[in-house]
Length: 282
Image 1 (cartoon, helix red, strand yellow):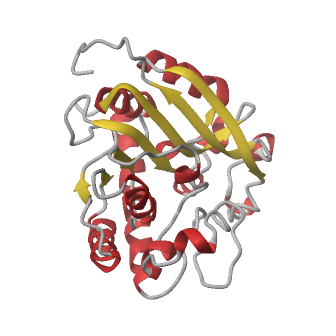
Image 2 (cartoon, helix red, strand yellow):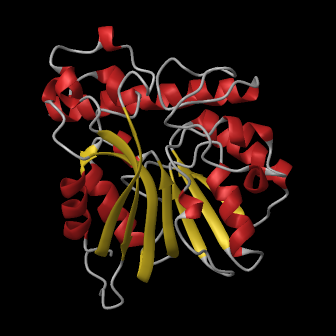
């Protein structure tokens, strides 16, 4: 039997999938993407997604990979990737973070990107071919059920995607599963540094706009701990209001103001203990 919670989760997933498909098409036509629902154009500034990568980083990358970025940070700047390492990008989109990581791990390393949207996967594959990087593979899958074996990657990155998942605990548990002991979790995400009202969390447009799914920082830390991670750190990098993030305040539910200004981009880091033993596929 399908429960209301299951139906709600699948509705969120499908809305997110549709939005990412639209973003892929926009990137192919030369329009930039953004974290909000309606600001995707070549002229609109978006405080969530603008100026995350410098010119030196994006030099030589396909323009479509840059335009398709829907991130809220730059996870490749979070961590010292080493030659020969295997990296996984959750919700890899057009592939910008995968391609940047592939450069850093070099020909002896490898980078996987996982995404559920066919249009983004097709765009990412085109970007891989344009970039000429053979140490990359894009896989279709949901980040709650990563299509890789346990203990197969050294680093998990992600860019403003986990907040869109309906079951974030499951995402974090599966990220823990695929990491090798001592592996690192280093992502950018949207978080809430105080309580966000239920009225805003239940609004679908706010979900799709990267806002309503943001976890409170202490909840995020707790879920990472429950998944088995240690050395958990959250560092806020940008703060913004709903209006600054591109949402129309007049379209939001009553009571949304109580959560305004409490949302922020953050770096989230954690480590899988060296002592972690295989248990339940982890």
